[in-house]
Length: 143
Image 1 (cartoon, helix red, strand yellow):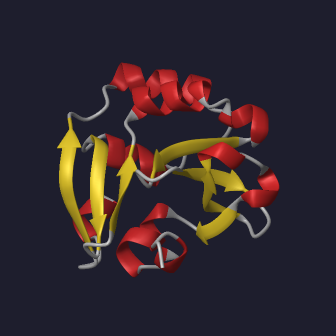
Image 2 (spheres, one colour):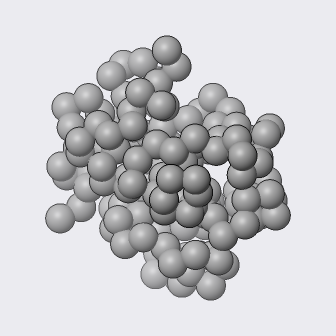
């Protein structure tokens, strides 16, 4: 089942656009230097540019397939953090990235203006863990 249907009560979807098309997802898979986790594919099949409110404190946005390609290219994400894929942002200058970093493969967060492997912060093993079990949410929240 899709992670969005099982989100913790800490989260609320406040906005979403149309799901990514099969063509957009195919282009994303061809673009990506990593195996894209199925949990992300399942999310973008439901919607794109999904704005998720976290405890009325802040938002994270999960990009759709075409936005994912565009923003990874625009910020040269793979140049600065090889073998990664940025999938969203916190609407405050940080991006959420799938990456095999210091801890393990999983979801990391890093400032757009300091895209450096050494500056990535491990959030959770998966977006599923973040959104359903609140694993790592304290690393995203502004306090």
